[in-house]
Amino acid sequence: MLQTAPPHAKRHHSGLIGDQPAPPAQDIARLKKTKRDQAIHPGWLVAPASLWLIVFLVVPLIGIVVFSFWTPIRGGMTPDFTLINFGNFFRQEGFFDPEHRNFLKLSIFLTTLWTTFRFTITVMAVCLIIGYPIAFFLAMQVKNFKWQLALFLVAMVPFWTSYLIRAVAWLPMLGRRGLFNKMLMNLGIIDKPSSFFLYSEFGYTMALAQLYVVLCIGPIFFSLAKIDKNILEAARDMGASNFQVFREIILPLSLPGVAIGMIFLFVMLMGEFATAVVVYGGKTSTTGTVILNYYATANYPFAAVNAIMLMLAMMIGVFFILRVVDIRKEL
Image (cartoon, rainbow, N blue to C red; front, side, top):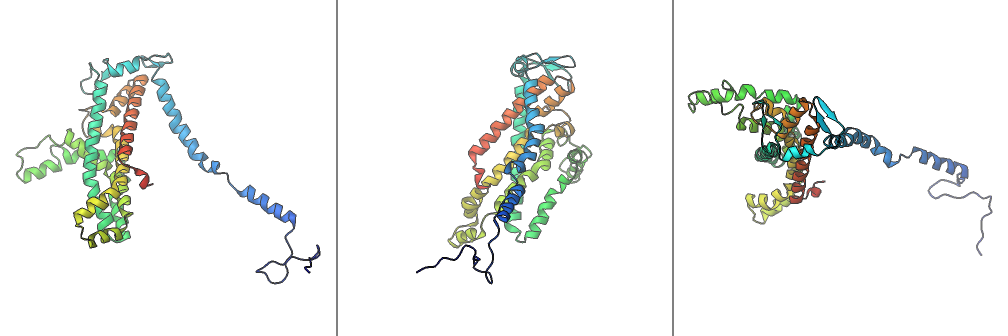
């Protein structure tokens, strides 16, 4: 017959030497309360970042939308609702051209948005052509991680300086007395200095590609570095050529990194304006320079309209990239 221990008996805890008394109830309650007090609600962890985004992103965006419906007046704007700013964007004259100092007819704003998009796509293609081989070399050919990191940091060196300094640095290289012209003249390719490089579409494209190519190299490098090398070796053991391995394995697995890099480039290039002024000499207008010019003339409502159209174009471009490539594999 089983016998139960008296209530006053000490409880035995396995793993301990001898009989240990059970912890008092008040100690257990105090311990639970301490843990509750020390626990941080997950909401507090994201509160600083959320507050930052609300104050410096959401509120300014709301302000841009509101200002776009206000009526522009000489030297500012008045809070009178109007749709004329959007009408001017699509059909009416009113674009202040920084070179000719006059007002152009036509829907020049849509043309300017298309010019911005065209430059963006061109620079994205150049960055991909330059950046993918560099990322491939770092991830596939350099075996030592320390060397990978060192070479990647070398690619990041230009970003350690001011953006404006990097843009201005192209002037002595692309000018009529610059490095490119002197090199071509010494090689006998040209007889006299050419204006093809500076204040031209070529120079503008090359400058933008150099300024932003690292945004393409980084995501592609990390995407390629995640590929299991055993898969590549197995494919080669089964008779696949290097080109087949690249086409069937490496390229598909690196597409998420390519897409992320293209998104970075697309967003940055669509809003670009400083390089157009420094390297292109203001000979072309991008949506960024249009916004800058209207802001400088205190036509804030129309600057807001151009900013909204630019954001819509960015959203459409990013949506298209995400539809083509599933970047969830990279996240």
